Image (cartoon, rainbow, N blue to C red; front, side, top):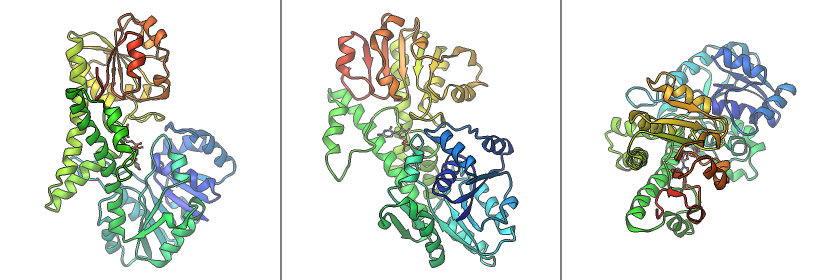
Length: 433
Ligand code: UDX
């Protein structure tokens, strides 16, 4: 099978590589010539477990080919997967410019019977708009939202818990079934529906998960005021099968390229449809508040500007992605108060440094290649990301670098007892201090 993937970002690159892993000939297109040149050489700017190995092996087996323009792929395939970005615009709507311009370019190609699969997250109704606009062209459209997570993108993509196919075309349904057959053990994991429902399913899934996180964060505030422990509450509700055990970790809230963007564009969609989406709004507000509250706790405790060490800058472990990372807001707040900040992240030092390179106090940020070195002569440690190497850190070694250590743990990675035994001041979220 030959297919073209347009957009070599996170989703596009991982999807392309998974398609080439199962033996398809994949033509991956991106307008960023520099990115394409690097990908041809096996270099990716994304850190994702397994990515480098899979990229190299599929380049060697000539299953994946990179291009900087769609025209170059015209002779090879009529099946297009669109994975370009849909960032928030200044009105907090999903900006569909890249999706529309990609479809326009595809429409101008000469190959017949094109099938365009929209994987980018787009508001319900987008596919219908495209169908109407191109009704005189030989193009069919399918909505096929993507649910892969950063940090476990390859295993999610190779073993999806479900594939959503939104179309009313029988032939498109059949083609997509063939594409995804190697990825599903049970054909029932492929769920067919109308395009608008498929488009909405993506928003619904993300907002449902984000709302679990915000609710746990809300409960954690009550824990702190009443002596309850959010860890126990989590265990207590996770065993209720109607609630389930996932996405119940209280902490600094959600970040990343999807949840914040999708919730805001969904709230805007509601406004445009004259629907006030109260729950979605509260989920977003709670998430912002959670970070502000934590930053205030640090600043109130430390009192005067001092040096603070930050462990973790990426929005979650196993990625170098700092988009909407809670660490960004925490660093901003600390800089506002004239703190010096030592930063260590196993993968995201460079990316967090880019976020602040134009900040007037950039010189107050100091980057380290070793987590313990970052602690040297610094009394305060703030944990923003739950990388495994932080949870298994050597507490004695930490103490040797910093006498009188105070830890503000935004991800609840340490056990209360261990810290008590070591006589380290410890502030976590929703747990007895
Ligand atoms: C998410 C969706 O899970 C995925 O289906 C979609 O395709 C893209 O958006 P991702 O952004 O990679 O994936 O991260 P995910 O693992 O879902 O975590 C999102 C955020 O929630 C992270 O910032 C994480 O730290 C936070 N989180 C997650 C919590 O705060 N508590 C939890 O219990 C779980």
